[in-house]
Length: 144
Image 1 (tube, rainbow, N blue to C red):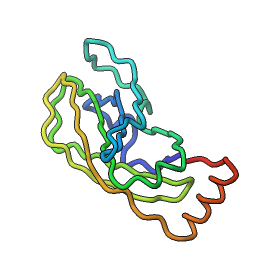
Image 2 (cartoon, helix red, strand yellow):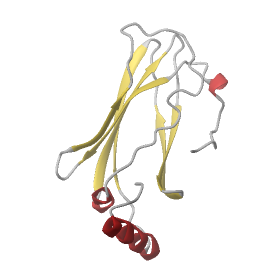
Image 3 (tube, rainbow, N blue to C red):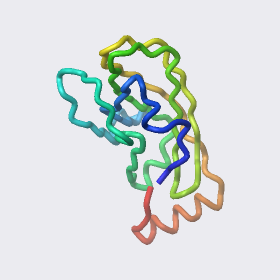
Image 4 (cartoon, helix red, strand yellow):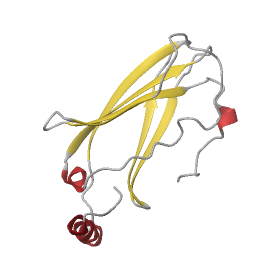
């Protein structure tokens, strides 16, 4: 599990809370992952320590053969406006960092629910990682 965060949960003075994360295959259009957190209708200024800072999911080996995906993120903002919200997303295969994305989301009004979708290409894996992935696929095991 990642513990290398740029700030602590106590630094979340904007009460940003992540409520949905969806990944879809752009070529085929299928939804691969859709994680939703229960959100009350009313957005409240309550800081949940360490909630939603880390999402772990497992994919079938077929996921690594996709070329382009869309990642939709939904989040709420508390009573204070956010300007230049920076989001860093890291994708791992086991403990190997495959790709890092660094986004800046513009202005978010107070007490708002926001959605953004980032579309990007998945990186090619080096030959060693690809071979390891194939061995695990043949065994029917593995964590992706």
